[in-house]
Image (cartoon, rainbow, N blue to C red; front, side):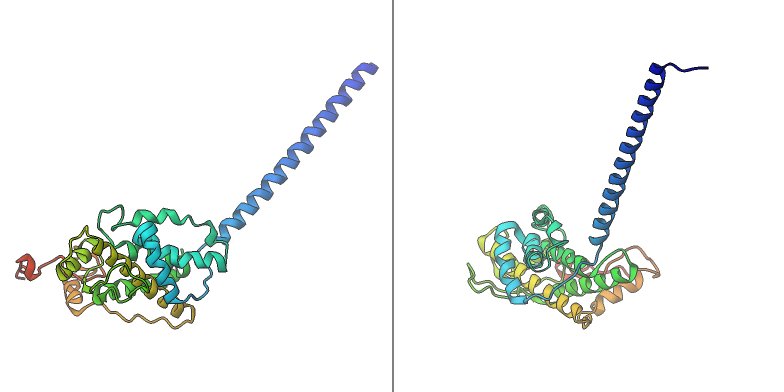
Length: 273
């Protein structure tokens, strides 16, 4: 069957259009593949742990104290540690929105659960020492737990800012909870929980936690971290009946038990076995 000149030109045009679409599709596919590879590379480069450069604990403490008055306890600790790393290291620290950690105020949104300063510190430690790898995660957890036990067992705040607004006394919390930490300080200091002095105390506490956190991270960076604050003998005794593989196995915790359970102030006695 013979084709007319018009038919030949029509088929040639369709072929050219088809080739153009094929070339366009290939180009788009290549660009999509390149973008996907770049995104994958970006995701990989933000995997934990992130690089760390040793910081000066006192400088960080002073920044944390000022940061407390900008965005409260959790923000104060994290901003004081991450901000200098954003300047010294840059990416991936520059991807972290520090304002997010304002929500840790007052034991998370003023609920008074986990102390916000410890919350911010735990996040900073996990950025530097943590990750999805189980062994890496265990290292970060060991540092965090040591920090929390230090907080429970030490009369705090143990750091005085260079230019404080008020002079503040110390207290022993026996707990990592904001509620208990604040209440015990109020009992010791005789100041009210919504006073300016209590707020100042939490500013000092934010500085103290940030300072100690950096000291731990610096030791970790030197390969010299060793846990210094074991769980109390009383808490270990409680775990003997209540924790993993125990007779009851009805709780789990790496913290002091006396802050909430069976203390003289609560006028409760432990049930007889």
